[in-house]
Length: 173
Image 1 (cartoon, helix red, strand yellow):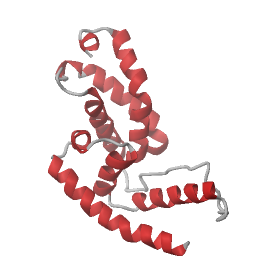
Image 2 (cartoon, rainbow, N blue to C red):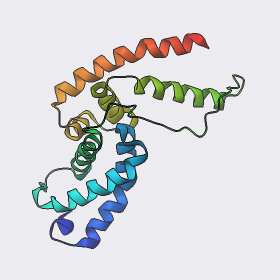
Image 3 (tube, rainbow, N blue to C red):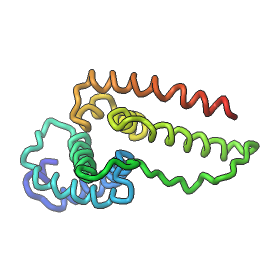
Image 4 (tube, one colour):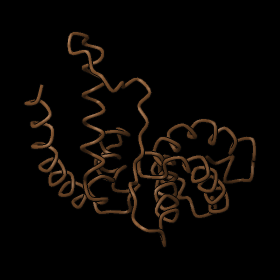
């Protein structure tokens, strides 16, 4: 980080290489969909321009993901509300063979993602960051620019909404 802040473009290139996949996954899961690559590219450009504001004692990952989250929000600002998470699951088929455990796992994953997708945006964001991206509560708070207590309360509310949806899916099996 110190080398990148000092203007070493190769060092910044290493950061880009290290965090591109996570940034892309974050943008995609937060609703950028097919535009995730553009969001990530813009986020890295903005991060590079703002390196002078980075606090050396801070962690780069949540700082970058906060920029990615903001760029994802910017993508949708001014547009009509649409389905923000278009997750394509190539491994899930229309017909499910309930005798094949691998298919059950894929179907369960698809149902979970569909349930998360149906949550209001604020709930979906905290669930996505905390559980799908496996960020800590502190990293989630930094990424979404929220207080840690807000993350906890939104997670609790979102999980309470998800439980009945997932119980219904389990019951249908």
